[in-house]
Amino acid sequence: MNASADTFSADENAYLQYRALSMAGVFALLFGLLSLPALAFAGLLFVAAFGVAWGLFAVLRIAKRRDELTGYGLAVAGLALSGLALLGGAARAGYEAATEVPENCQPITFEMLQPDERTPQLPIPASAVQLDGQRIFVKGYVHPGVDRQTGIKQFILVPDMKTCCFGGQPALTDMIQVQLKDPLRIDYSISRRKLAGVLRVSPYKKPVSGLDGVYYQLEADYLK
Image 1 (tube, rainbow, N blue to C red):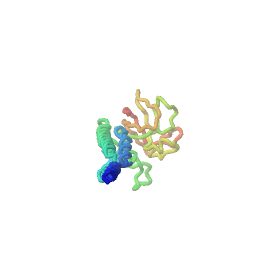
Image 2 (image 1 turned 90 degrees about the horizontal axis):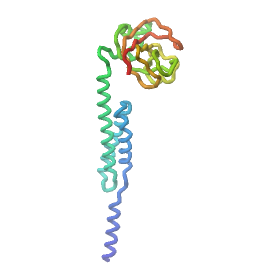
Image 3 (image 1 turned 30 degrees about the horizontal axis):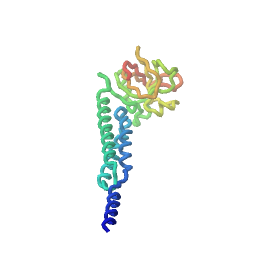
Image 4 (image 1 turned 60 degrees about the horizontal axis):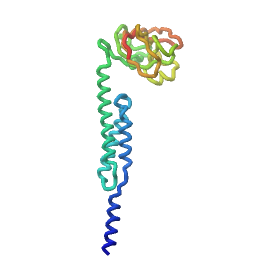
């Protein structure tokens, strides 16, 4: 009788000691590892944010079921990695945003160059005309219609990857013809460029080879 009781007790202990590995914890660690590139690329911060949310979910889930699940340490590690990536990446992006504009430059966006709906008869807004001769800072992508792949001095800057990568005729107000001052040159890539210099604005199109023309020209002496 005692032997049977001892056997049952051992089996019961073995059953109680068995706990399944939580896949939520495994995925929390995976998301934490995938979040690390966000430290360098702000565009991946959403991955880190998702990793933090999932990590919290996994930690709480496993903590409530510690008698059934293992993987708490994995979940905590994943949460820590995602949190590090989110905070570090956000801090880095904030610092870059605060320091990326050179001195004596007015930062502008392509949205500021679009026609004014209140004056549809004008090809460009009056606010853009006021930028003529001003030193500005702008970010964008090199349009693929360049005549060479390296040592490029003149090119068309466009606002987004769609316009950049697929080529074709962008909207007239989505183009800035850039002329780099010596000794600045670039090689063609799909990376976003940061430029500063004097902006020239005219309501009359300047012809551009392979495109309809441009209203905006930038004499750039800063490139990053």
